[in-house]
Image (cartoon, rainbow, N blue to C red; front, top):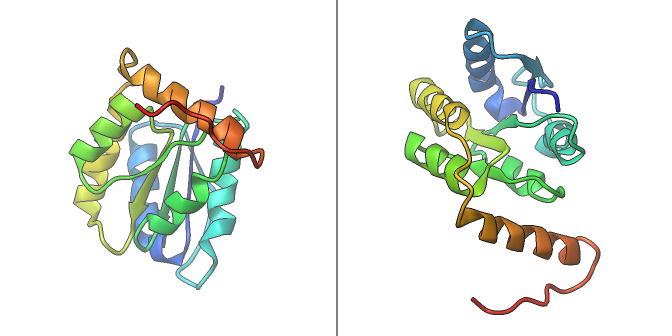
Length: 160
C-alpha cells in the first residue's frame, strides 16, 4: 500500500493545509496535495472524497483532511468503508485515536486550530502506532456494523 499521505482541504483549511504540506515535505514524508488551491469558496465533500475514497479502496494508508472546523470533513470521510477519520484537537487525542482506533485519516480545523498546535497534533498522529490487543475487539465490531449498515441492513449486535 502506498505510504504517500494525501492531503486535501476546502477554503477554510487552505492556509493550515499549506503549513501541513510544508512540514511533511521538510521532513521527507511523501505527500500529495489534493486541493483546494486557494481560499475561494469550494465544497468540502468533493475534497473529502479524494482522500477518503483512496483510503477506502486501499490505494493509500493514511490521509489528512482540513476544513474550517474539521467536522464536515470527518462526517463525509466516515461514510466510506474502512475509513476511520478522526477530528483531533490535541496531541493527546491524536495519540489515542491512532493507538486505540487505528485512525487512518486525520481531520483538522483550519479556523479553530493554530499552526503550532496543528503541527504538534500531526507529529503525534504520525508517530503513534496502533496498539491492537483489546482494541481489536472494538475495531472488529466497527467492521461488522459497517458491513451491515452500508448495505442497507441493520446491525444485529449483542449489547456489550
